[in-house]
Image (cartoon, rainbow, N blue to C red; front, side, top):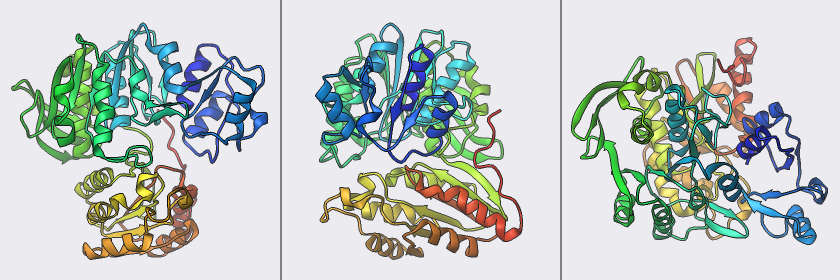
Length: 465
């Protein structure tokens, strides 16, 4: 929604908006753009003379702004519908979807096209470090958009990406997620079949062949399909994947042809998969993989995706958006590969609907076994999950301990800061895992670590160069 607001502002529209519990980096982006942001939700926030009201999918009947819009019969739409109408129709649409890796892959694909001089537009659900904001309105014909399988609005329960008119659809993987709207994996697969069905026959689907649930539905595509994966038979294949001081190295093969060794500037095998997907989509846009070598190495990632927020007192503090067991596992694997000699401490806030349910409790425990120590915070807004389905923080701690790793439940941000500031030592890496603001834990922890050393805390977000 913040990205769409920026695009509309660039088109010359007057834009206002409201939200609940806003936090950086999106709140900072809106403030920089001069877009007024009102909080909390209230009828008075909606201008009666608004030409159009865009309703986010977090809102439902009973919300005061939804109710006043319906009472007034004001024109309203959803974010994906308006994006398609205003920006995607008439452009070449490259849609990046999948359960994991969408934001990074979208950002990298846009970066590759920009470096190739194609001047693309993009909309992504995060802040790419190299662009410094979550959207761009370019003069080129390509529009790169992160395609989410979540629903559009209370009045349109289809997945967002069916609106996006894809000429190219990247589907990195398919797993069970969003337990609040999808009852099982089969329902998630059905959503992605809908995406495959709106790719024109002249178009292209780029698919992560290592995902079993995705392989099961690929035959439903009516367009060309190109696959990618690490060390498997695929159209785009990475071999000899390994960390190096310059980044993650891999040997790229396309259609069996060896294209040489490439370097990716961000860590993790999961990001090598993201890079393969971006290279395949960029090739369809006319950018050869060989010409992407320098851009791939220069890419600096996305804020809140394995982002180093700072180092104080010899302790590194990372921020990551992971809220699904697979994402947690891959984040911890990447940090484990960059071993600095100290402990790897994971701090987890169950915040998304799926992570606050018991659906993945044992899967989370196995994922967290890659850390040396785990701290579980209180689940965010647990009342929205029925009591019988709600995650038990104590049970999760017990499950992690059964995997052989020390774990504890520390409910409050104050308690977590106090514990880590007292215990973290030289070389330790602390990764904070939440898809929300987590009460400003990152900055508060860095400040506490600096205070124990008698040093001023560094900036929360390094300046973008």
